Length: 201
Image 1 (cartoon, rainbow, N blue to C red):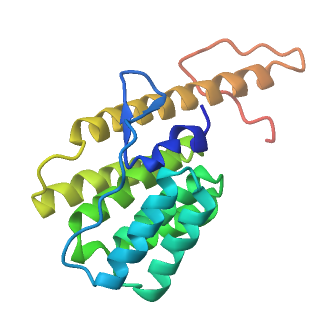
Image 2 (cartoon, rainbow, N blue to C red):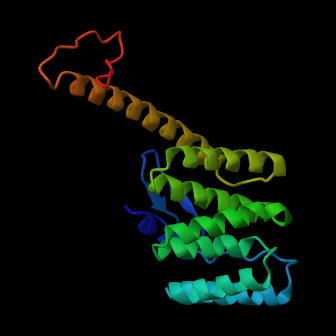
Image 3 (cartoon, one colour):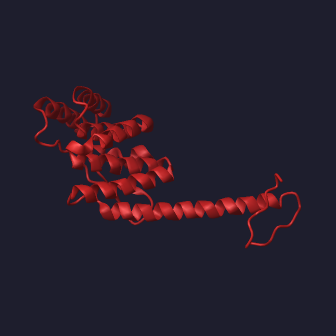
């Protein structure tokens, strides 16, 4: 499943994980807009949500982008924009929006958590394991510091464990490749307790 497919949740608002390594879409629900924000901001985000509900992703992106331009200090629009851009297959711009939203999220801890969660999903699908682990840990830390109920702490903890396992397996695979390369000239290297020799020496 590609990143855009996993996040075609976007009308959607969330991503849920099962026990395996593949994200699965959450039920389709409109993304809530936090009360207390400027009325114009609420209206623009609401327009984006309405377009997304009709599967008009580009129209939603335009509205969310307008909200971030008009109200650059309101974080939820960055989360919504990042999600929409992921559905459209634009991971680079999605990452930029999510990072910006996370950095401006002091006004809205729930929006900041949303940005960090989706950012972690994005990095996993891009196989940026270090960045994904950092994002999941940031999500856990932000949730704890904000004393936010709900969210998905168990999901973040599970994803960190999976990423650690993936990185460990990658290190083993790299060592095996070095050992194979060390014997490609007919030489024999068979001591598994020692690292593969550096053939450049």
